Image (cartoon, rainbow, N blue to C red; front, side, top):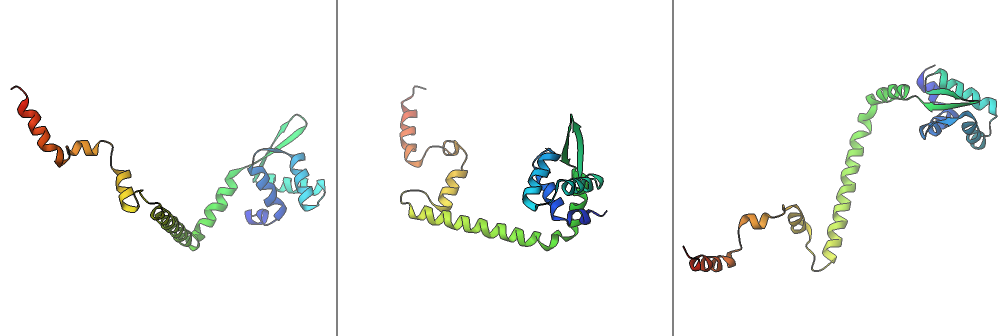
Length: 157
């Protein structure tokens, strides 16, 4: 059975979603699926068997229970196949991310402009990115120079 034949069934997709949250007993899966889809326990078991036989799910016995989990390998194969088509949605998603970042920046700058007495925009960014001690490394301010010269003249040589 082809991967999309398996994943084309809404019940099996939902079972995989449940298993993606973590390992589950067959009874737990059956309970959720019966409530959501209104199908019988044997029908849920059949879907679990299809997932297991197609490699999408693994099962391990634990006492009287059977615990199911997702097997990621077939999903990687589906992802690889979808990779051929990512070019159709990836650039628009990058453009969307850029626009969202631009909007956040504009809102932040507008909010900073509304707060008097706080550094805004480039000034705040420059101050935030200046390394600690950068002012000290650059030397004393120009107004301190004459005072330093007087202190050196007073020192005994």
